Length: 620
Ligand code: ADP
Ligand code: MG
Image (cartoon, rainbow, N blue to C red; front, side):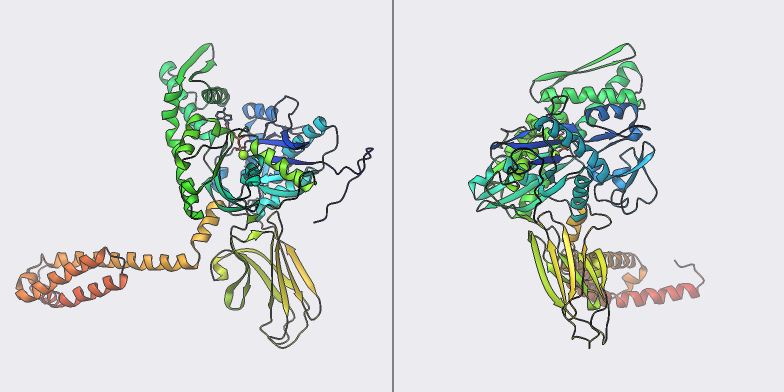
C-alpha cells in the first residue's frame, strides 16, 4: 500500500507525518507515539493517558468521552455506551447474550449491524469507537502541537475480518488513516523489544477489565507469528469488582437491614469504592472499603490474604485457557522463553504469582501493564513511518478461506493458520455450455461442504465469454492484506472482465464460534461421527439389557432349558464387556448375539402371553 505524504505546511516538508499508536480497549484506550527512540503514552487534559472507552450521548449537545462520560454511567446509564468493542463488527444475533448484560436499547434493523439507540439518535459500534479515537487524536494533537492523521490501531489476535474491518471503519470515521491493525499481543512483545532477541517463544497473558486473552507468539529471525490464542471474553477485573460489590452489599444488608441492590446510584458509588480498594490491594497489604449512605457509614477492613482467597476462583479461570493455548501451540510451559503481562488486572500480586507458577518463569512487568499495548503500537507506527528500521510482523488467518465449486463443495484457497499478508490464485471453469455468468461464493471454515462453512460473500462475474463447458478460464484471486482484510477478485481470462469484493461480512463470529468451526473440521467430524455411533449403540444396548433383565423375571425364563439360560447369560456378559469400549461395531455384534440367544426366551414369553390372553388374564 502506498502512503500519501501530507504537507502540513511546516518548514521541514521532508519530515514524514507522525504516525501514532492506539490501543482501542474494551475498558480503557490510550494513544502513544515514538519519541526519538522510546515509545511514550500521551496524557489527556486530566494528566492520565487512560481514556475510559465510554461515550455519553446526551439528549442534546455533543457526545462526551472518557472519565466525564463514565460519570454519566451514574446519572444517565441508558445513554452511556461502554464495552462498545464487544459489539464491533457484530450483528444482533452474534451478541444476543452480550446485549442482555448491557443497558442499551437496539434500534430497528440491527440484525446485521448493531445500531444502538442512545440520546435520541442511532449509533453503530464503529461510531462509538470513533468518538473515543477522536478524543485520543485530540489529546495527541494538543500534546504534540501538530495534526495527527495516521495511526496504527491494535486489535485482539482473535478478531475476525468483520471485527477488524469495523475497527478500521472507526478510524476512518474519526479522521484517521489506519495504516495497519496490529494484534495486541504482538504489540506487547514489541513494546518490550522482544523482537531484538530474533528467535524465541513468547506468551502474552492479557487480563484486562472485561476480557482475558492468552496468546503464544513465535519469533523467528525477528518476525512474529501468532501460534495460538485462547481466552475468555467474559473474564476480567469487572468480575472481581462484582464479587467485592456482592460482598459489600451483603454486609450492608445484614448490618443496616436494607437492600441497596436496586438503587442504581448507590450501586455505582459502592462499585467505585470497591474498585479503589482493589487497586490499593495491588500495592498495600490491607485496605478499607468505604461507603457513605444517607448519613450512615459502612467500613470494611479487607486484608490482602482475604482478598486473595476471594478472587482465587476468578484467577484460576485464566489457567485453563492458558493450558489449552499451550496445547494448541504444541508447547510445554518450559518451552516458553518469555512471558509478558498485559492489562490492568495483572497488577494484582496473586495474578502474577499464578502466571509465575504456571509458566515457571518470571514474567515481564517492567512496563505499565495497561500501557504496554499502546506503547507497542507506537513502535509499529514508528516502523511504518520509517523512524525505526523496517520490520515485518506476521499474523495468521484463524480459518481457511475458499469458494464454493460444483456439488456444493469448498475449494480452499488460503488455509487456516497461513501467515498474512497472504494471497492465492486459482483457475476455475464453467459447468454448462454457453454459460454467461458465474457465481463466486466466498466461504470461511474448515468443513468440506459449503453448507457447513460460513458464507462471507457472493457475487456474480457477468458476461463472460459463452464457450463450451470446461473451456472458460476464470481466475479467482484471494488477497488478505496485513490487516487481515480479505479481497476476492474473479477474472474471465478470455475477456479480461473482472469483478471483486472487499469482504465486509454483515456480522462476525465470536471466538468460540471460530474455535467450534475449527473443531468441526473434517477429521474431527469423523471422530464425532464415530463417537455418536458408540453412544447410540450404548443407548440401544441399555434398552436390550433392560428388556432381557425384565424377561428374566418372567416365568418363561424358568421354563428355559439350562443350556439356553447359560447362553443368554454369556451373551449378556459379553455385551457388558464390549459396552465400555469404543468399538461400536463390536457392541452391535454383541447386541445381535444377545438378541439371538434370547430368541427362545422371547418365544416362550410370547407363548405364555398368548396363553395368558386366552385365559382372559390381563397382560402388560
Ligand atoms: P482493557 O484492556 O479491557 O481495556 P485495561 O488493561 O485498561 O483494560 O484493564 C482495566 C482493568 O484493570 C480494570 O478492571 C481495572 O480495575 C484493573 N486495574 C487497573 N489498575 C489496577 C490495579 N492497580 N490493581 C488491580 N486492578 C487494576
Ligand atoms: Mg487491553
